[in-house]
Image 1 (tube, one colour):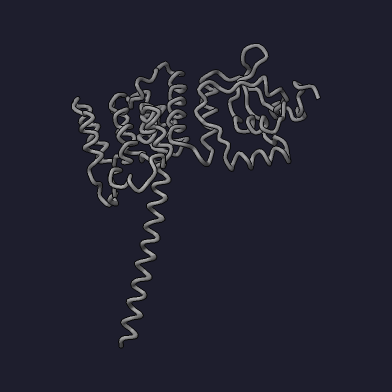
Image 2: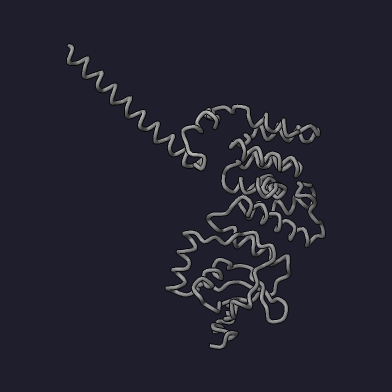
Length: 304
C-alpha cells in the first residue's frame, strides 16, 4: 500500500484517513501529557498487535512533508514499540490555538492524569483561548475579566470549578522537585497550591528540608510559610522549625543517633542493611519475649 494513500473515503461526510510513516510525525511542542510504559500501555500494545490501530490519530500539517501530532501520542508510542512503521491519520486544518485546545480536551479523558499534567494542560488551554481574544497570561495568576471567561469555559468542559482550574495553574510555579512530590502524592494538592507562592530559593530550601527530615507540610503549615514569605521573613530556620512541628494525628518518629549503633555494624554496611538487621533483631527479641511469657504462664498453671 502507498504510505500516503487514502484508505477509506467512500462516505463523503467522513474525514479521510491516510496512512503515513511514523518517522514523518512530530510530537506537539510542549505536549503536557506524559506517555508512560505502564500496565495500560502494555494492554494498548497487545490490542494494536492483535487488531491494529482502530482509531486514526489526529495530526495537522507541519513544515514540508512533516506532520504535527495532536491526539494519539500513546498509539504512536505503542506502534513504535511494535516496530510498526506507518500510522493511520486524519489531517485537520487547525491553527496552533485550535490544535492545543483539541489536544487538551482529547487527553483529559484519560483515567490517570498527574497533577503536573493537569496544571500544564489547563494553562496551555487558557492561553490558547485567550490568544483568540488577545489577552496573554501573566505569572500563572488568577486575573479577572476575559481570563475568567476562558476559565469558565475550561472549567465547564473539565467538570471543575473555575477556582479549581486556577489552583491547578498555580502549580506551574513550583520548582520541579516539589512538583514531582505532588505527582507522587508526597505533598497534598491544597498545600502545594499555597507553596507555589514561595519564591524559587524558598522552595529549594523547603525541598531540602522535606528530603532531609522526611516531613511534608500540612495545609496550615503551607499557609503559614506563604504568609511569612509574603512578609519577607521566611528563612531556612523558619522552614525547618515549621516542618519540625508535630501535626495533629501525626505518628511520632523514632530516630536513633548513628553513634549509638555503629559499633554493631561493619563500616561498609549500607543504611538499608542496618535497617534490615535492626528489624530482624527486634523480631527475634519479640519472639524471645513471647516464649518467656508462655513459659511463665505454664509455670503458674503447674503450680496451681
